Length: 431
Image 1 (tube, helix red, strand yellow):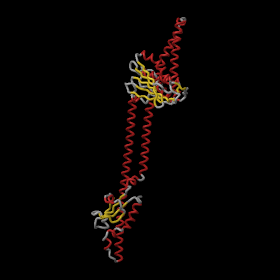
Image 2 (cartoon, one colour):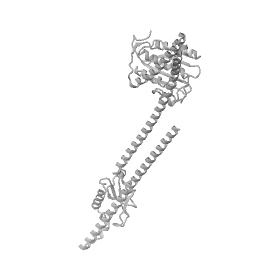
Image 3 (cartoon, helix red, strand yellow):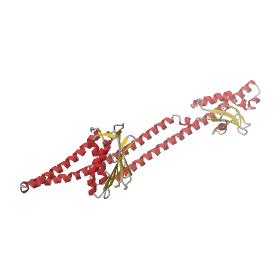
Image 4 (tube, helix red, strand yellow):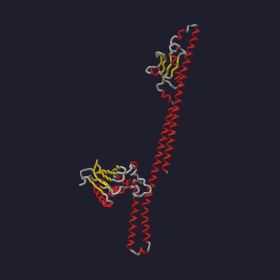
């Protein structure tokens, strides 16, 4: 129920965030459209202003001719006299500069029917100018030929953004920050939930493991307090043995937890010595043979000849082997089948422990080496442990300068491989 509620919260938060993102993108897009519309209106107004001033100029020229008593027929006979190049260039520069477009435009005066260019700045931009959306008819100053003033802006997109680009960039930065914060928050919450589940499982498992020895010690103490038992030496010895055995079991549980804390804090120190790693493997496997035989299983060992020696801590590496073999037995279905091999590869001595057990789900392969992590089993305790074993194995192997890998298929067993750096020279090989 809690998981469903959490997933619903994540879904609603994601929908809300997506809504904000779409809304922000919508307003940015509309802002760009408004900016472009303002730009278009400004250009159209500037071109009308240029035409208006050309009309004023032409009217002033005609009045001057009339005042001087000269003929004015030549003023409207040619487009070059009706629209003087220098005047047009000056007017265009004045209007474009007022819009902040100095040097960012190209213009031309051309005949629309035959596309004859008269004058302007059009080299290399002929097709764009003919098809430009910014055109102004010059019929008001020169009727024949349907001449047009056309303008283009090669860098129109850059100018359309203009100052608005700062807000676009800021919006993008803020949205990326929100996205990162949202993802980080969700990841943190999921990690905290996973840690809470792991701790809850650890407490449940620890409580279950503690109940048995505590109950046994309590029962033994109660029996020892009875006078009929106290007078019987054999019974006293038997109950004292129970107290001692269960106390040792409690001590082992406490040691496991303390070792986990020491590994987390990096306080474990190794006493490494050069020795035969395969000899240690053979010894540990021999000790496990009886346990596997009692379960009607099999434990095969294959050791390559002439292996190099290894610098290792005997106590901790023994614990590593015990943990791997113990897991292979615990997670077997029915009679355990285990294969152990030791070989050399690329300057390492490689230990492989394979089983045909339940395997590891794909989503848990990256989690099994985490401290206190175990596959979630609720309140079931058919497989004992606290999720410390593989965490311990990984840390100890890494302290030896090695690494551990796992290959597993859910329902088809697992293969753990431990790589330890070998001592490589002519005098450091097993005989």
